[in-house]
Structures are given as C-alpha cells and as structure tokens.
Image 1 (cartoon, rainbow, N blue to C red):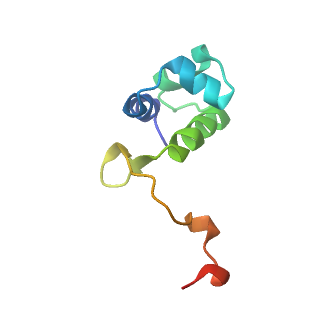
Image 2: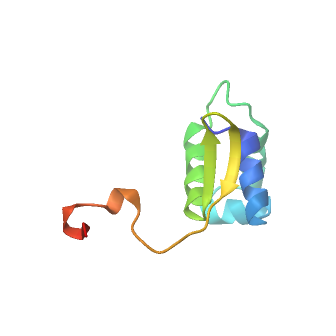
Length: 91
C-alpha cells in the first residue's frame, strides 16, 4: 500500500501544490492533505488514495514498495503500456 508520505513526495517530485493535485483528481485540497497525513492503518480513504496514485503514476511517478519504500520519477517514453501489449503489436 502506498503511504501518505509517498503521495506527498510524489506530488513534490512533480512540483505540484495540493490544490493542483486536487484539481487533477477531482478531490478537495483538504482531502489531499488528510490523505498525505494518513498512516493508512485504518484506510477509509482507500479509494481516494488509489485515485491520487493513479493520476501521479500517469505523470511518471513510480511508487516503490519492495526493498525500499519511496518514489521515483521515470521518463515517460514512447511505446505501449504493459496492459496494451498483445499479439497484434508483437514485433
């Protein structure tokens, strides 16, 4: 699960304010603040957290939850997304 700290760090990597992230996700800036401060132990905010993560990931943020916990910004390159790969575009 992505933590509130990771969401805050991801937003910072993109140089976005809370208001900008809120506008891009359709939630309020105070809601973004609550999610960023939430430890996720009692996750009533799961759907909002997912919405925020999806928007941040679409902008090139990679959430790390394996050997290390954090975020990184990856270059958005040309090509197909993993879920769009199929036999018809196999070269």
